[in-house]
Amino acid sequence: MNTGRLEQVQQFIRYFVSAVSSTSLYSPGHRHVLRQCDEAFASLLGTFAKRDEIILMVIENELIFDTVPLDRSMYISRFIQFFVTKGIEHLKISRTVEVAELRLLIEALAGQGQDLSEVRTMRHISLKRLARQEEFCNQGGSEESGLSLEEIAVRERGVFREIQDSIGKNETFCMDGVEEIVFSCILAFRKEPVLFPYLSPLLALDTYTFTHSTNVCALNLSQAMMLGIQGRLLHDIGIAGFLHDIGKLFVPREILAKPEALSEAEREIVSRHPIQGAHYLLETPGVPKLAVVCAFEHHMRYDGAGYPVPAGTWQQNVCSQMTAISDFFDALRTKRAYRGPVSHDKVAALLADGAGTRFNPELTRSFLGIMKQYRAADASSSVPQESSSNRNHLASEQHCAAGAVLA
Ligand SMILES: [Fe+2]
Ligand SMILES: [Fe+2]
Image (cartoon, rainbow, N blue to C red; front, side):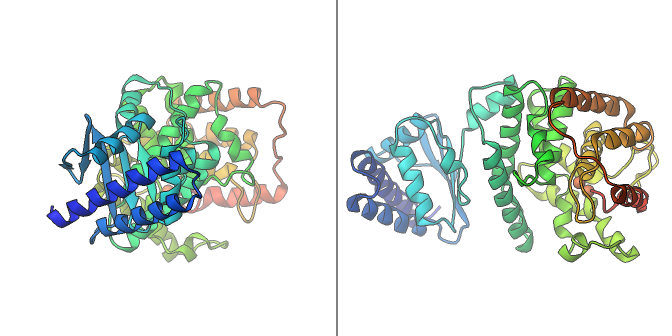
């Protein structure tokens, strides 16, 4: 790394530390504080050089910038202290960061307590607790709170914007946002062992704008936890659910949004999304191999049919089989332009009907058990009834070639 860039980072840290210290002494709106924040922001912009982001990590009491440990100084020591106090070990700032976001980070670090929830929703700054996350994955629990439902929805939109931008620039994307969402879903399930707290949004899409990716992630986690899966495998199954349809970002939007039936040529384009998704994920650093496999296999069927057409001895991975069930459930339970959500009873009947052909029978039985428990726990809430026009649309969705437009 060139010396000029290192000096820029050290200068940024000096201004940043001064701004945090002043914020803890004065009010955040004090002119002295505002000036220091502006100075910190100006020097931050100088650190990017030609890069899109900078990453600072605290590892064993050292501050690492782009794999280089920074020489100790009073400011570096203070910087480390701020981050250790808040339990942060990884800070990533994108080139498109706004001064208001940096101010918010400075305020959060200057404040008492550990509440970083506002910072966690920012688009261009992300914080992580690497060691604790790893510990969580290995041991199955921690005291962290993760993102709230609303924060996950905001984060999810940001993640998809980032991925879409990366695809547009022919680049890979950073997994931090996806990791954070999956991590938060796992924590929420652990706190509410009574099932599906995360599936309520499926019934209230007007309240929470959860999309297909988070829903399938949460449904996968729920299935895996029901089977007693924990640790790294649980995490990877959640990631696989979240990223299963990433290949759809390569499909023209006008095809995906088309309300009428697709032409043969359009179906062919949509049916390439598992292969395109798997290729893209394979190139992306930090993506578990299971997510690559799942992106490729999620439209295959238990009986060997589906697409892409598998080779003779191909054995579909169990995670892909789980994802096929989650995908089917979410596609039917989500409102479409031409129909409302299909009723639980109807979805359960269709799942049971597909057990052993479309779906793994054991996993289907387990999933139906989860649905049953959820219904019992949620008995007091009203379940939307299916209209007759729904039934007609559902019949045509079920018979569309290989279910390409379903999910
Ligand atoms: Fe798909
Ligand atoms: Fe899907």
